[in-house]
Image (tube, rainbow, N blue to C red; front, side):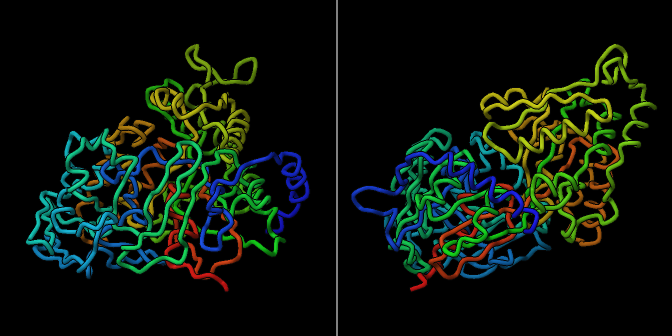
Amino acid sequence: MTSRRIRRAAVAAALAAAVAACSAPGSGADGEGESAQSVVIGVASEPDTLSPLLGYGKDGNSKIFDGLLARDAGLKLKPALASALPKVTDGGRTYTYTLRDGVKFSDGEPLTARDVVFTYRTVLDDRTNNTAKSELDAVQDVRAAGDGKVVFRLKYPYAAFAARTVLPIVPEHIAGGQDPNTGSFNTKPVGTGPYVLTNWSKGEKLTFKANPRYWGGAPKVKTLTMAIIPDDDVRATRLRSGDLDGAVLPPNLAATFEDDGNRRTYEAKTYDFRAVTLPTANEVTGDLAIRRALDAAVDRQAMVDKILDGAGSPAYGPLPGDDPWFAKDIARPYDLARAKRVLDEAGWKPGEDGIRVKDGRRAAFTLLYPSGDKVRQDHALAYASDAKKAGIEVKAESATWEVIEPRMKDDAVLAGFGSVGDPDFGLYTLLHSSLAGDGFNNMARYHNPAVDEALDAGRRSQDPAEREAAYDKIQRELVEDPGYTFLTHIDHLYVLADRWNGLTTQREPHEHGFASGPWWNVEDWQPTS
C-alpha cells in the first residue's frame, strides 16, 4: 500500500474540489439512507436485465434468486435450493438433486421441481436470447421426478457441471406466461433469495428489501440500495460525504481512505483481467507478426505498478498466475527488442514517421475503451505508448458500449473478462471459434483449430490429467498465436463503513458490484452494536 500513499493528498484535494450537492440514493421520508438497518453501495454499472433466463446471476450470488447450489467464501460448492450436493450416476452423465423442503418464492408460492425444469429448458431454448447458453451445452435433458427431485441427463460427462447449477431458479407461474426476451420479469423479478427488488430507477439506483419469506432466515440488513455511479471520482466523493455506506473503487481512490477510522478497505483476489482484443477481420490486428510483437512490447509489470498501484498482477493469459491450472512457465518478460525483431522479419519496416509499413499499409489501428472507466483508459494509453516504441500506432478512443459493440468486429477493444472456478467457464466463451461474434463472447473472433480441440477436450473429459494437458496446450497456443494482448489481472477494492460484522470477500469474476464484493453474503451480516 505504500506506493498508493504517495498520491493520497493530491487525489483527496481533487475530490474535495469535485464535491457537488448530491441527494442520497436512499434518502426520503423513510430515511433509509441513514437507517442502521440499511446499506447504500455505489457501483459503476447496472445490469441490462434481472432475469436469469437471459444470463443475470448465472455465476451465483444474486440477492434476488438462489440456485440449486451456491459457493462459500472459499468457492466450495454447498447446497442452496437443493438439500444436498447432487447424486452423480451413469459415469457422470446423470445428476439428481433433491430440493430443500419449505422454500417459497417471495410472492408466497412454493418452489417445485417444475420451476427448475422450466428455468433450464428456457435458458437452453434457441428462442431465448441468452448468450451464455453454451455453458450448458452438456445438458441433454432435465426433468422433474415429482415435486421434490430434479434429474439432469448429460450428453457427455462434464466434470464442472455441478458448478453450473448455481444458476438462479425462476418461478414458472410468473415467467412461464411471458416472452423471456421482452417480458416484464426482466425488470420485475420474483425469486427465492434473501432480498426483493422494490424499485429500479434506470441509471440511478436499485433498491431491495429483505425477503421475510427467505428460507435462510431474515437478514439483519433490511434495505439494500445499489446506487449507479459510473464515474470513479464521483463514487469516492459521495462515499466521503457520507452519501454512500460503501463503494467499488479503483486502487488510487481506495488509497485515499486508508487512514479513515470509520471505514475499512477490502481487497479481493480475482479472475478479472484486462486485455486488448485483436480482431482477425482487421488487416493490422489480424496479422500474426503484429500480434506477437504487441505481446512482447507491452510492459505488464509497469501497468500493475503505475495503474493498479500494485493491486493486481501481470496477465500472461486468461488465468491468473496463482491459479492451479496456470501453465507456470509461460510468463514472459517485457522485450521491446524482440518485438522489433518480429516485425522486421515479417516485413513491417519503419516509415518516415517511425510507424511501420508493409505493402503500403501502416501498422495502425484504433483501440476503443468505455467512457468513464479510468482504469481501462489508463491501460489503453499505456498500451498505445508501449506499441509506439515498437513502431505500431494505436489510437485510443473512448466511447459508450452502444458505440463500441457494433465496431468490435473491426476495432480493438480494451476489454475485461474472467470467470471463477473451472477453467472451462472463462476460456470456452473467450476463445472457441463457434462463439466468434456472439455478443461479447469471443470478441476477437479468434479461430485456432488446436485451441478449439483442446477446449472441447477440457470440457468433455473427466480425467484430471487429460484436462490439465488440454488447458496447458491452450495457454501455450495463446503465446504463439495471441488473439488478445493480455495485460493485467486486477484485484477488486471496496471501501465500506465499519458498522457491520461478517464481511468477507470471495475470489471474484470479472462481473462484480451487484453480487460479488463484500456484500456477496450481506444476508449474513450482523450489526456491530
